[in-house]
Structures are given as structure tokens and as C-alpha cells.
Image (cartoon, rainbow over all chains, first blue to last red):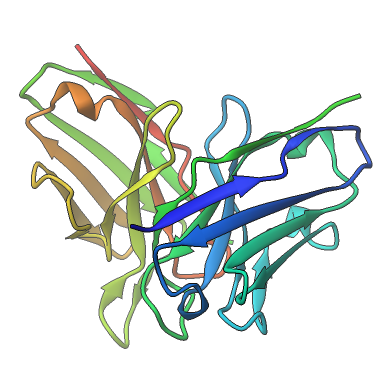
Length: 123
Length: 113
């Protein structure tokens, strides 16, 4: 059974940093692109970042470029999102998700999602 | 960036009746070389993670009831729930994965009338 479990969320002041982790199991983690999606309170889903299997290629939402970095450790089957210079508008539930299908293309739907972890940026 | 819009914002449908949600993209998400539309639909219930329902605009994900169907091509797409059930109350999102911004629509809330 595919499982994705996020951790590392919490309350942080504006300008602070936080590192989210996503522990993956139940599938060959190193075969799949992985992604982060967030949902701000009362808002819709927003894609944040996507990372290739070997970490050599990534995409980030414009508003987080230079502040957030997606990374992975295939040996530990773990995905991470390092979030620096956090803003109030980054407050959201952050979901880790798997990009559907093994392969070289990130252009697929997201087929498995974690339960999400809440990040609150507030003074 | 490709902008996704959905209509209506919300709708209420009687049990057993049809619910229809529209999704439009600001540019075509049809890739000419493979004739595939890079469009997915997700169901999102409160307190749960989103669930993939449909990909390639019309292919149902494994385990999704056949009352859910997707159609459309290019820039105009539709999600149809034929015979609404109580467990279908949720917010539904379309998403394009044609470009590396992977944008979602704003969502459509479906309730029981």
C-alpha cells in the first residue's frame, strides 16, 4: 500500500524557516517524480514544487522561488521541502504527492497524496 | 502560465441526479504529438487528502466509480457525476499538467439539494 506521511509543520514567525518531510513507503520511491501541493485556509489547491527521481531537475512555483527548495533522499525514501523567508501567505496545509507513473516525464497527474501537514506563519 | 477556471463555483443536486462541472484552460492542454489532453480531475473532502478521479481528461483512475466521467478537449472540459451519491459531497478541482506550473482550477463545491 502506498503511504505518504508528512511531518515538520508548525507555527513559525514571518521571516523564519521550516523544513517539511514526507516519508514514502509501499512503492519504489526512486522511480517516481514527487511533488508538493498546498492549500491555504479557505482557498483552493496550489502546486508548489516538483522534483525528478534523481534530484537533477525541479520546478518551483514563482512565488516560492529562491525561498523554498524541494529535495529528496532516495536511500531514505523521503521527500523534503525547505522553506525559508516564510511569509504570512505561506500559511497552508502542505501535501506531499506522487506523480503518476514511473518514467522520465513529470507531466502526469498526482495519484497518491499524504494527509497533509499544517504550516502557520504568524507573529 | 496556464490559468484554469471552473464553473459554477458551487452547485446543489438532488440525490441520484446529474452534476456537471465545467473547466476551461487559458490555452490548449492538448499535446498534438500524442493527442492527449493533460487535464486531471480531483475530489477533495474536508479533512482528507485530494483524490485523483480522472486523468488524460477522460481516463478514470483505478477504483473510481463509473458514475464519474470526464470529457472535453483543447481548452474546454467537463466532469460529470451521473447519479449523485451522499459520499460525492466534496470540492472538485481540475488541473492542467501540460506545463510545469501544474495549475489547479479554483474548485467547485458540490452539495446535496
